Image 1 (cartoon, helix red, strand yellow):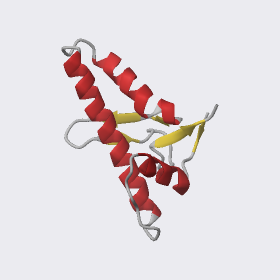
Image 2 (cartoon, rainbow, N blue to C red):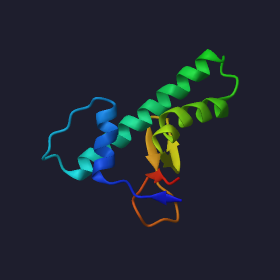
Image 3 (cartoon, rainbow, N blue to C red):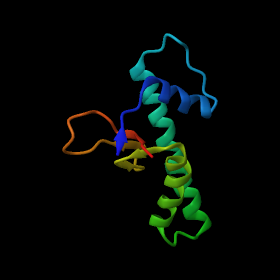
Length: 105
């Protein structure tokens, strides 16, 4: 199951990475800043793991980085791209805007 992220969740993500945000910052700016931070961390991690393993298996690198960056923080995502600009991609048949979500235990 998945649950929508709140403003507090996005602020917690930014606080975890020690990024300060003003209190009067709008929600959409906080959301985009947190999403960009997570996806760039994910893409950088995948590239580093690939380099260490001589580009042997990209799916292994994705699994390692997804676990360390997203799953351990109880977050999930549908798709992502690292080409040109790194970004999360929302679910195709879903009318909502959510790209990342909270994992329920």
